[in-house]
Image 1 (cartoon, rainbow, N blue to C red):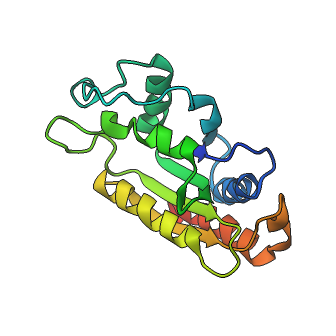
Image 2 (image 1 turned 180 degrees about the vertical axis):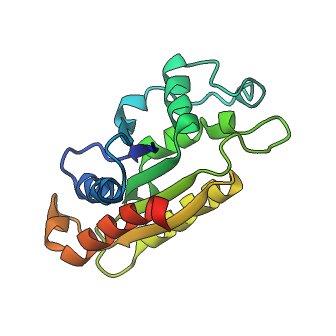
Length: 188
């Protein structure tokens, strides 16, 4: 049995990011077993839990300020794989994802070794800019963070030029790539 956590960083239902993440999940399920578990964390619900940089999380292995954050961090610790899906906002991931990542100090021990090394991840980022693939930069930033934590990034998908709500449904190649990315999470 595999457990996968999907971090959804878009505030809009049926957004381009949401549609792409759902395709990744379809790919994961296509190669998995019936008892595999895929759970989504809606990061919009976590926006009020801003890290205060107390630094106590590294020793404790949890956020001592917000039990709700610790609950979500534990879900990631117990998971085999991670899907991170975000829109691009001003050359970076969404603020919802950034707020949550700021709590990832709990994944580090006091000596800065990782509590989540060995996990697998796939990344997806979507941007509206049709000329410049800003989503690629976001995926690269996320890959560096995960690499620091010892998480193996199996692959990523960056999609540019999908500014209109739901526009990604017309991007059949991107949707196929998202499905394949999900299938690769545990098979590659």
